Length: 355
Ligand code: SF4
Image (cartoon, rainbow, N blue to C red):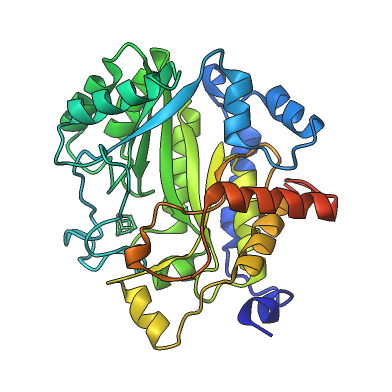
């Protein structure tokens, strides 16, 4: 029996109950910007059409009168967990050379202008009409607010750009940054924060060397929602020492917090990370494909039905640096298998969600 199965019924859960109460109190009093909130009727229509998962792609097709695409750009941001401000080691799964991305024009060797224009040109030739600029590698709110505003103003200056996605850590969203983003929302732009959450368990955040707390995550989600900024959280399943109950608790808390969307990933061991050392010492074992698919289904069943699912796998990790797992992480294939498994179970996202 593996660790996951052993832990499944142990109730081994260190989530501070105050955090759950805080989340409940928050959602009871939430004063969400109604200009920018998800349309639940559209999500309901996805389920009524027989899809067991609230897929982001389907939602966007039904919500927008035009085709949209997220253009990933690398604006050269570093991370306070790597540059010595919080630590210089980074999270245990983050490669020392930075997180890899395999999109040609998402690269600092091109100017931001070139990155945006080359990719818009390519996507327009495929019939895409409107774009979000996705500031992806590093911590993209880690800088002077005036500089950040310059970058974001520039990205939004393109007439076909309708919004931004900004990848960041929960402890890097200060008041000044949030105010700038809120102003874009007020001016009609759709602003998403891609938030590195990973887990809602403090013990795991510490093991991962994240150098922020669960309370930072709760606060970041609350502050964004208050301002009409959408939040897409990134979570990892199969983290070291996390039980089945821990993972389901993460799903439930994020549902209670009414997070807008999630990207769900398996933990991938890549070269030159502390996780790689743990892996070779036998201190960590990745999930096999079947275990992962089953866990994603369990996680979705415990999540709110109104959280959009942007991804259920991580297929941007180049094979040259991937140590484990060996199975193909292709996201559409995994999404297909997850949907089939939910249909086989005769369930769907949200069936076990309780506030
Ligand atoms: S916060 Fe993100 S960029 Fe920074 S070390 Fe962790 S995974 Fe890497």
